[in-house]
Picture 1 (cartoon, one colour):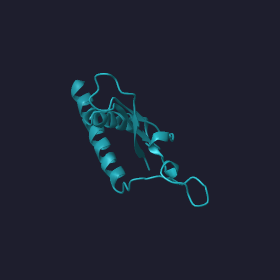
Picture 2: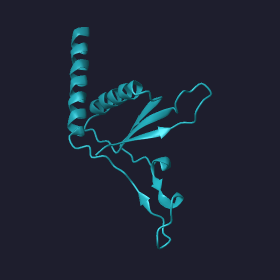
Picture 3: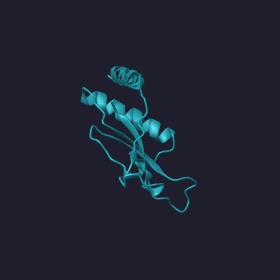
Length: 116
């Protein structure tokens, strides 16, 4: 199942909030067309929420800043580092995204038909 992450970018002098990139990894699309439609959809969403860009990939992207290490707050009793990873429950999300992708594909096909 795809994951959504935020990759913070260095702030510029005129930034009123930290710039970021939306990262969608561990994706799986059965066709190139499906992938392209999904990338377009994610890119529109990214721009809509104020991201500077969007990365969509089937690879796993590790963003160290998104890992919470408790050693900064306290050491575990046995001296080991304790790591927590929070992953959202996105049940039904894939279906929603795929429905939106199907709508986008239908729009593209309709536009191509009208252009002929």
